[in-house]
Image (cartoon, rainbow, N blue to C red):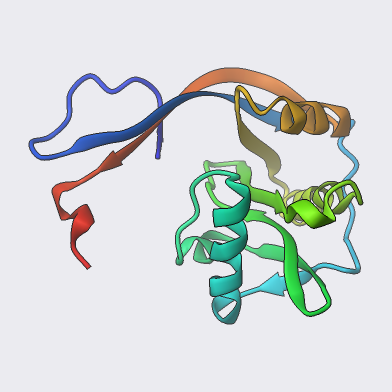
Length: 168
């Protein structure tokens, strides 16, 4: 997934998806704190993480994405019902990614608590949290702004497939 205009593609590459988005960055108003119900997710949790992402569509997430940073989850009745984690790490910043909650567990503050917990870990390292949202995901944008994120800029998301992308 890229953020920005693509002027030319290498031979055999194709555009899989394009869409408008927003980049939001944490302000001092963002309250960050640990979340006692959160558990660290790892390799054994990948099938559930991928399933939750497939059902909630927070954005790109592949089986090895969890290796890019710490992912936290919330379990209810043994099942993973919400998660958020870290993905991109430009100098001085870390992206909060894959913020998602099973529809049956929405409205209980799980996403808010997880974003605050991930942001806490990022700030503990002296970095600034940021995140991305689809421009048409008004509920997520409203939530992030109410938590203390500010819109930094508009972005154009582009997902590409390489000719090798179909190989196992």
